[in-house]
Image (cartoon, rainbow, N blue to C red; front, side, top):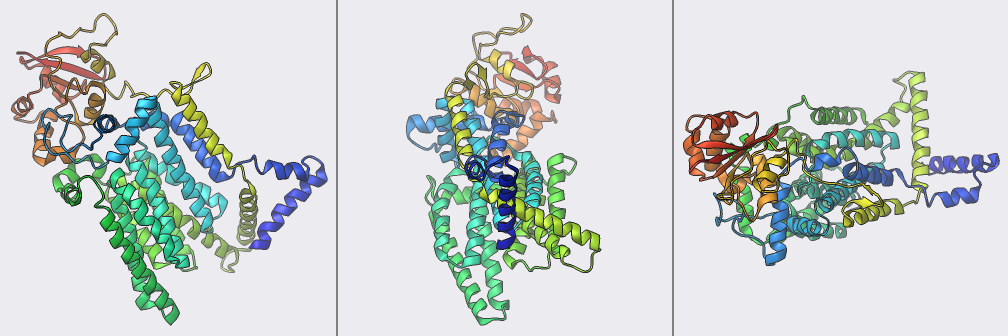
Length: 554
């Protein structure tokens, strides 16, 4: 393989020199300017997430609003919240701000550059995640064209959760942990595992997805433990047993360091109760199994199909740990929609090398036709040449320059020269932007819009849980919401009453009265909007195509 990689590179350089178009010295200089494919993946994805079509989708979830305000509270009080400050219903009751470190970071970025800074952070994390995924595929022997195709499929599947939320950090840490465990299993160097407890300290304070890290440890522990008993060669049995022991010790250390959070072991109890609450798991959309009518879900199904083809077609045996990793990724992705991105990332890093192995074996197999064998051999040679050329590209500065340029734009309210390139904002067709402007007394729309009375504006607002974070972002601390999307805070019993209100079921009036909300902000075409419009105790204060704002009379 070394000779195959060297010859194409040499051949290209000789051809260029002999033609007189690109001298050898210039080609040597250009390699430090031209970025590799992985660097291009980072730059192009970052630009799409901050300047392009994907930028709008990152603020498609209002939950980032309460994350930002929590971060600002941490900055000003120098303490992690332990009771709820945002909800009129839950105010003063115990609350686990289990993503406090992420909240603090976005609070700092928001103070520096507003929503543009939050958008930039999310774009950098997602772009870095998939650039590392691409590198991992190449490092494990994937053909460059195969890696590009698999990356595009995994990217498309992951767009289902492309949101400015702390879960994107778990994507990045999952890639890092997978890479560490793969290299440890291949090399047996236990020092590599030292990175895992160090990153776990940050992970447990960034996002609840730190449980994925323990799932990966379990996968590799079981894989090596089984290999310890099934290996035929004594040396392999001893090596597998040593790896299993090292992984077990690492898991124990990681479990201990997860106690380094503001809530100690109580955080673990809270997460367990939340994830085992069947009512919540069955009624929160992102925890439901995927509906394969959507494009991201179909891309995930395609990735699963390619995984099956790759595992069946590759004659080279893959490790038991990789097989368990495939089963874990498929199961979790099928179980809940929110798991599709991490599942796609894991499958991509495993399936791309397997498919490449399958193609190489077909190129040397007598079971296929001569024409197909020649075609696959040419494809293999082409991939080797492209990989050699890509490995020679050393334009590593482009990702850093892209981040610096975007950071400079964010620090200038999104402007570069006379053009505003970044303008992060909540979509006024998805969120009640103008209605909240009116509620805040800042609405300056058409003359037909009603002005709100000065009295009573400070009363709590009832709204759909998916809008609660946006209202917290816009109105806190002057006004509180009756509900938002922190379902682990509100609990099952309250959310049952909330669903009764939202769906207009019998008893909705009494349930709404129990919230003691003075305002109700609901979608314009919702059942609740029609019910409130016909209720004598409520009057319309503002209406547009997105939302209707009602004020309680008396």
